[in-house]
Image (cartoon, rainbow, N blue to C red; front, side, top):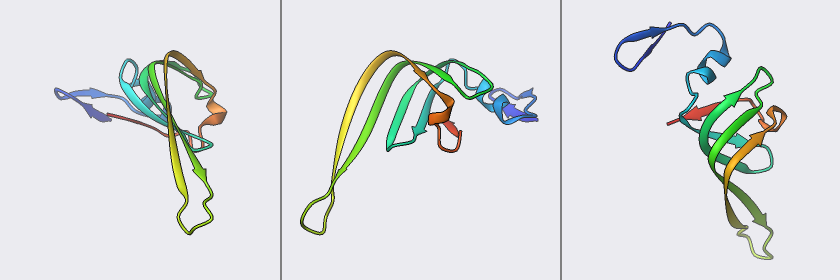
Length: 97
């Protein structure tokens, strides 16, 4: 059993139970292709498809430089609502704040 907040006991028997506890919370999701999402988790399913609201997407682009240092360019995008396919999650791990 996992302990939540004010001492209430919540049953966590499967990994997706942890995702269920994150509903309506701000979560951080790392995707394939050097992309990250931060937003409010509205829904999920057994395939780890997610629906996020008030999403900030960060894309990291690495540009090869002729010198030794690689230049990392960051692009940020805002979305009101976003559907994320579970297959885009590399390890299917979600962290929350």
